[in-house]
Image 1 (cartoon, rainbow, N blue to C red):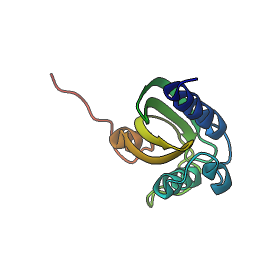
Image 2: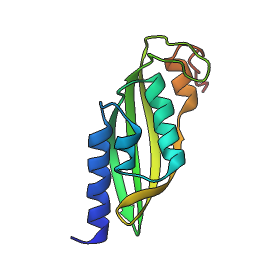
Image 3: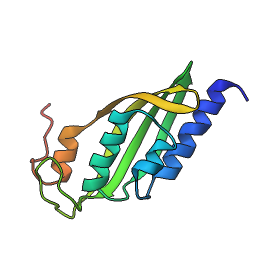
Image 4: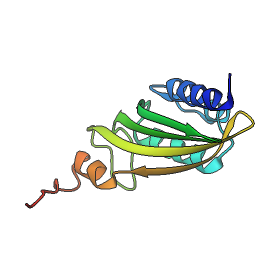
Length: 130
């Protein structure tokens, strides 16, 4: 199997292992040595325990894997000073992973923070004016 396919398969397996699971440091370290990524996962896991991940699109090139995905979870823990609301979120995001020696070594992430705040009920939904 060529490296692009291996990287793609690795990331799909990673998403499947993390989705709906307790995202412990031990589980994270099976897939990554990127400490910033582990900290990010732990942060979101504390606020949205056992959140689920859904891949919508995946692209690979060289040692990079780019994912367009969604995070679904329930706000059951503090998030950036916002106490648990019990609300469900459906957050679209894109993440790029760098792969080296069978592990994620770096990432870049973008998510719709405004939509997240709206879903948590701390911001009014933005309206579009035509």
